[in-house]
Amino acid sequence: MGIHDTREMGNEFMPKKANGAAPFSAEERAAMQELVQERRGGGQGEEAVRAKIQEMTGRDREIAEGLHALVRELAPELQPRTWYGMPAYAREGHVLLFFQPAAKFKSRYATLGFSDKAPLDEGDFWPVTYAIQAWTPETQAQVTQLLVRALT
Image 1: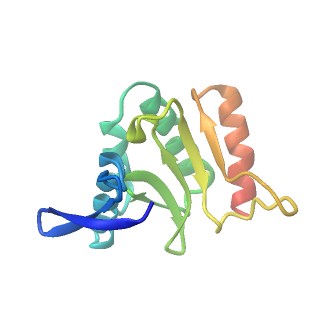
Image 2: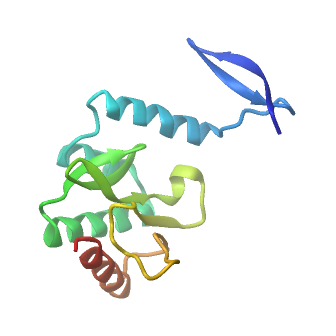
Image 3: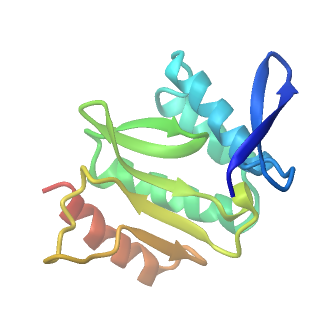
């Protein structure tokens, strides 16, 4: 569907699809607004990531806390920051991995994602995003392996 119209959103204009629907969900627009704030200097450091984790509830929070502790233990050189309002960890200013809570986009599972800066290559085809239902010893072991590979 093509974009043919706009509607005013505060001081910005949001394009509309040909059927009149907004092209982005409210959650996607909120994530983009968070990215704008991060680019203006917000969302950097341990405090910002911990604040995002504290906003989470239930399994999202348990997973984020487990992941954060693991990253800080195995890769203290990574810089904690937020990315689109999600906990993330960067190397040399570039996001290496991030945690997307299930509640952020009303998904049935949380995800752990790796950017192209993480050398997880396996031939011509490999996964870079993983669904996480719970932070268990098995999950931690699998994430540990991925993180170690991503750091090489």
